[in-house]
Length: 127
Image (cartoon, rainbow, N blue to C red; front, side):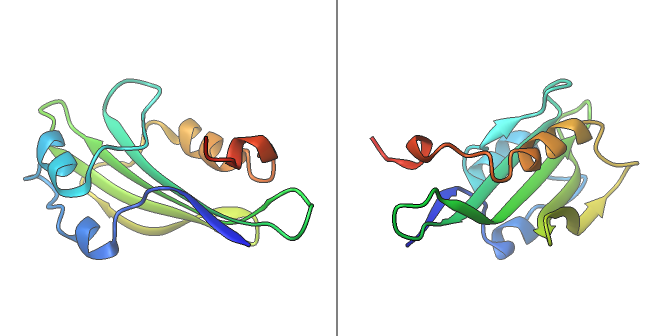
């Protein structure tokens, strides 16, 4: 049995975000509410989705995770759009559109991927 958790917008929706023009409010209008916010301030929003596979009575196994990080400058205008995934258990950048030096909140990306395999089965039951 395979189940999906979280939300990442479609590639076409992500591609509609224009660096240097879209704002936080226009991004949320186009993509919906983010999964989480950055930890070093409020300058990055994240959309996170995971796919789990469960075989019989065994604990679910996470087989895919995707994170889209959208960063904003001090005027709340989009400065970065980055997408991360897992490749053989390692975090890799899948795509990157950047107008500055990159995410200042890399620690959260590591945390979002760091719990791979540490999901409690009870957390997957919809209540």
